[in-house]
Image (cartoon, rainbow, N blue to C red; front, side, top):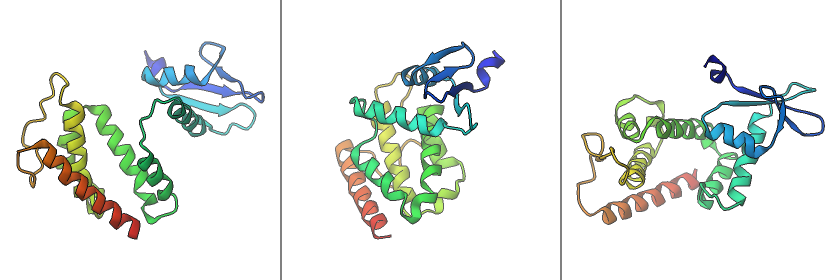
Length: 187
């Protein structure tokens, strides 16, 4: 069991073939994607130089999945991500994405709870409250039909949003998001 706790080491040979050091056989990007979906951490290193190539290959896996129609990242998100490489917001984006995925991984109820309870240095970021409300609305929409997740409780409803018509609430959030995007583009 301790064996699965450490990352699966994949070595890239000069021929660009990927070698699974645990099973002593060659693997494909699809195999690596399967390991990751099964919950396994993976580390990919160049055999000759020892360089860590994990990020490069993970990005390649995402790009291939997106090009096959398994879209997870909308075009506007990808566009904003590209913009973040040339703006002052670049330093916040990795932290925000990591925190968002960590909350999703930990469970939908914790997402809402963590947004309101855990002190976070990102709360000082302009527009953070709006992003928090958008995440809450997103989780309600995505997890509304999941058994065992009610979305109720003190942390489930944004304080400023009265209970009412979900379509009106969504329209308000979209409006606020558009305003935030406008402000960010002006930075």
